[in-house]
Length: 501
Image (cartoon, rainbow, N blue to C red):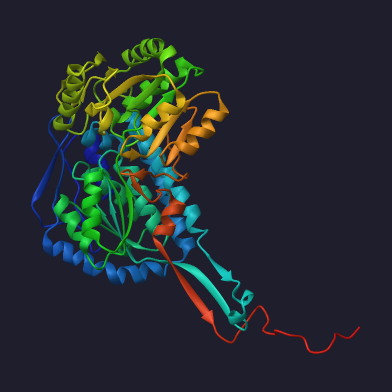
């Protein structure tokens, strides 16, 4: 299956990306076509899951969970290591699928596939570390004479719902960590990336993942809702918008959830910052993947004394970005996911201009391709400040007082990551302590992530941490074994007489 998916992408024909249910590729539901946002033609097709297929997948999942749980951690780790090597071997063709389906530039897609390889390798390492504890039960009187142990057991059936903006690496996190933990996983693919998602699943299967360990279903929100509500599912990992995350939580009920939701990330540029470096990084990180990242650079707060200089440097850097064909290896900014998303960016930039902001660059689109847009000085109530743009737009705002700008950043309903450019360690510590975000990137923008470091937010940005070690905790349950009347600690509470000399 992997070869056929990749070959179709290279040949430029429509990629068939079927579901994978109960150990078999193929589905009987209505056809779903994906139009490439840059090419403006059908690039991939699949079938939506039927009600019968959802039922069959759930029925297959429960006994599969027991089978996968019996697979030793070393065996799981070896499979994940092979998958990491396979991702590296196929990186160019996998990146091409991302470019076709999503308009993601090859250089961004190659970076994503490199991260897939890293993520699988980290998941393999973490699988080898799963263990438990010997509990100090004899430390209290009622525990004397007993022994207790714990180990982390697979949760059973996991559900992974992935987004379109990084469909390969975020699936690697969810599916890789779930398999490392010993679970079977139901994957609900994003409708915008059926082929890229199917390719990652096929890569794992061809690396030795047993068919009982994964199933892939396609479709819209109604399929996700059915899976979330299913009694067979024990834990759900979802990445997407805050509104959809709330829907997932309502449908899930009393299930374990990991929700990585939206953001409108802030980056602060202090008066002592290396302005050229800050401007260059904001330009690069603000428009990579056309700004379609929950930690993309959206709000840049620059000290008033450096504001005009920063704007000049930023616009010069933006002018140097190459916009166009995502299959061109030199392209920096490709298409957004669809024309509706692109139009929202254009509309919001115009609204900001009507409210008194200056649109220094961009503010227009060609189909789904948005010219990198720079909006200077929008009011605090503007959509480009309050809401998540999730597009090729960066706002720049002046500030005068460091304490005040922290409060301004915290006024957001989101709290995922923030960036900070300063050489003042006191400011770094203060911002780390007081910013209401899951992480602070000191010396860089908000848009930076290492896949083996905890990632997640607060407030409407969700809860839980999406890194393999943290996710394995979420994908496992603690099981205790109590040995009554048998103690490794000793069961004597007093010593009669004295020891012989």
